[in-house]
Length: 260
Image (cartoon, rainbow, N blue to C red; front, side):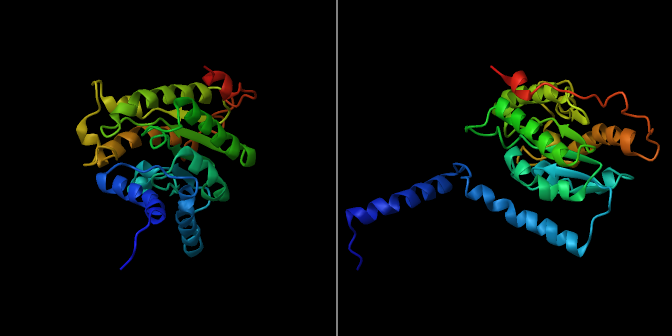
């Protein structure tokens, strides 16, 4: 029989505390060590590329689970070639960390990013300002290596599960939009506002049972918004002159826009 001591009990307390949180359904925050858990996902992408090299010139989609679950993306964006390199549960810091391997490695003409949802979903260090700064960092990382690549930043979406966080997400969207307006070859795509359909809250049928992830109807709405934007610049009939008046140099730092 094991003879319990005071010291042994103290050593077990951290594990018991974590077990209690899991059993009670309290969400656990990822530590810096656990944040490295996306490595397996990224390596899976790289293995997939070896087995079946992606089509050159594909538009890369990256970000969190709202893109991961977009199973009809390739069909919805035809005739544009697309490559989905989103990994579920990620935040902008994760997207930035792996940008070299999930975006830059493909030298895409354009990248579409959706994140920020998980960043502001629960109490923690993230704020609308910090999320907007991570968007700035994403732009800096990509344009530091691929200055000619267009970046399309989707707004953070509202949801029933995270409705309490919507005011913070809405503020982040405005800060991101303000920043993007100052940038060359970066465009903000608002999918959030149309989701409300003029109501106080978005229709429930835009979300699956968890109240968070998009349904086919929501993806159809996103397609109707995003595809024309991409087609205008990258479709078969895109004008070679498009964007010449938009490519302006110089942009104020985001820190000035989000300073409080």
